[in-house]
Image (cartoon, rainbow, N blue to C red):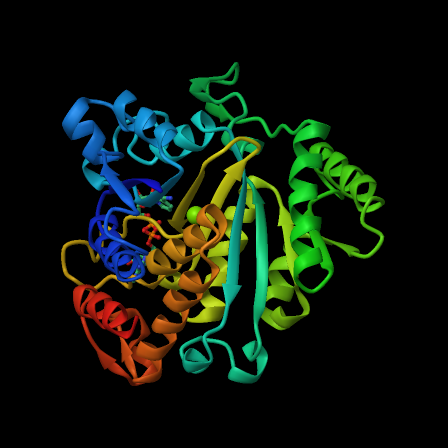
Length: 354
Ligand code: NAI
Ligand code: MG
């Protein structure tokens, strides 16, 4: 099992080692996992003058699965967006032809008091955000600020989707719903945006092939409201790249911390990429304060989806629960009143529990 380890920047370098410890604890036999590391993000710029060095992309293509930390470094904030460390993850997804991003949002019962929402609103929370990853304003034609005819600076990005791009992410969502609660909520802005009108039309067409799955629609603003009001109504949420980015950060707060949520990205071809939904968190980087749970749960998703290691994946997830049940938490979950430990100590506790 070939695994490319791209820890990246900031807390990426602190949380990925914890995920690796958890993986080693379930390795079927020594050498079953072949880990190879490469720099990405600011680490790539420092090492090779490119946020995504060619050798790093090659390694990702060689691997059966990529375990990714986070990219982003304030030292490079003055670069244009296309050259910044954060561009590496978008180029990597594009380079590997990944268009689907699964973001499960599940409440650990041990953390029902960690959320800013009332426990009775989030009890039993278990939803899946299916975010389209290859289109939308993220890949539309960008035009940096230029002076317009009124002598004012003007910039633009274009929001674009083709029917086939919407269709393929629709199938991912409906297939996932079949294995879960049988419901898909498609989130768009069809009342205002032409491209979102197409999104809704195509979702309705795809739904015809899944008569056993119920399809509903919400405008993104109403979806944001409903995520806070009654999040347990949702099973699978399918949405565009931009809306999925925003809604999943919002959804993470239902569970208590952005440091809890893993994700999986894939396309039609072989290979997949697993990463926490959060970024490099420069505000806490290098302080042994980051929550490694999202990284450990990303490793669990890797075991399940890339290697069919269902039992081992469940062991990782259960071990996280066991540590939380003992009242051990990282600083972001301080409000639970548990014993606060560092990133490294939390990772050791999970590996020991496994
Ligand atoms: P962020 O997700 O890095 O941090 C947002 C807030 O959540 C910060 O206060 C941070 O301390 C906290 N946080 C995040 N992960 C945490 C964890 N595991 N444990 C405890 N607290 C955690 O988002 P932000 O601050 O907007 O971006 C920082 C950098 O990360 C930027 O350069 C951005 O471009 C990049 N970024 C990279 C992503 C990726 O690599 N996929 C995704 C999002 C942002
Ligand atoms: Mg984001």
